[in-house]
Image (cartoon, rainbow, N blue to C red; front, side, top):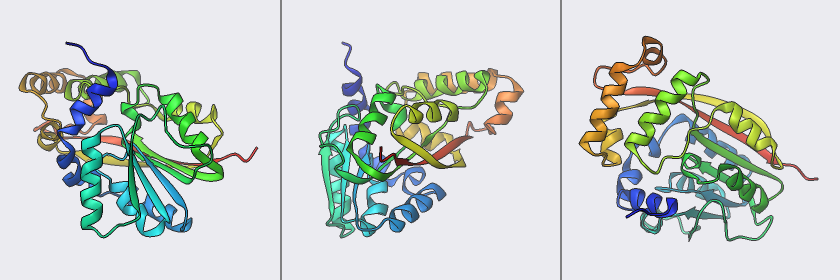
Length: 256
């Protein structure tokens, strides 16, 4: 039986919530350090963590914010965030469930909107960005962190294919150009962009999503079949581990 995209996302991630809480890829990284510094520089505000997943953005933002709302499609993810926040003594984190394309908050409700490793699961990327801009106060800051697609069609096609094989709820990793175009169509003006390279251990990458063996075999077959240019770009290793591009987009909402 087929299911909606939202149901698929909740099915994929709800049962794996604990794995995302403990995942080193999600729990740490230089991008999180930059993100926390940006929140600290604007301390005391109300923050929306849009597509919060295991809650790591919320945990880094909470010590510097008046309130953090952890927002996600998965109720099980939110339950994990509640328990983890309590264990860390972070009493200013609240949770709310829903899709990125229909955020249940009034206009200009937040001083900052943050999102990390979420946008590639959104059904409607431009609409999600418009919602982020809508709930942000004029002059407020939005920070988006996500995997970005390679600039060449050859590498892009390969990467989207293995992402979908690993996780059928995957929609798209957008290129930097696609990000900049989409943000330009909102009232979010990009102030700075930072690029990171992130190594993914293959075994933990597929285990985290409980990818089936047939799909793992298909990913490995693709890795071995592609050109040397693709292998070099992703720094693909003998065991299938590889390295990807991540970007941080720092934007401010136009006052006009």
